[in-house]
Image (cartoon, rainbow, N blue to C red; front, side, top):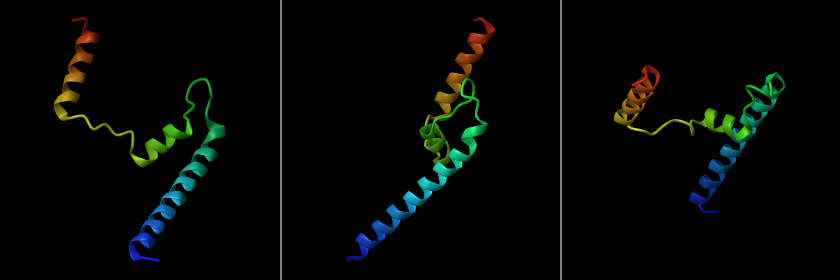
Length: 76
């Protein structure tokens, strides 16, 4: 087996191990969730744990959103 194929196989295996660990964490927390108010799907939990839900907006965009929110709540 070529070296690069072996490395890709190891990386894929480590990703699957990580996914399984995160899935088991989600299952452990599942009984404590109230389904009407704070239920989180596995996909949402996975994204949260892996950082896929982190915003990639620029500082200027975030500041503008904050200003719009402030104007909304101030009634402007």
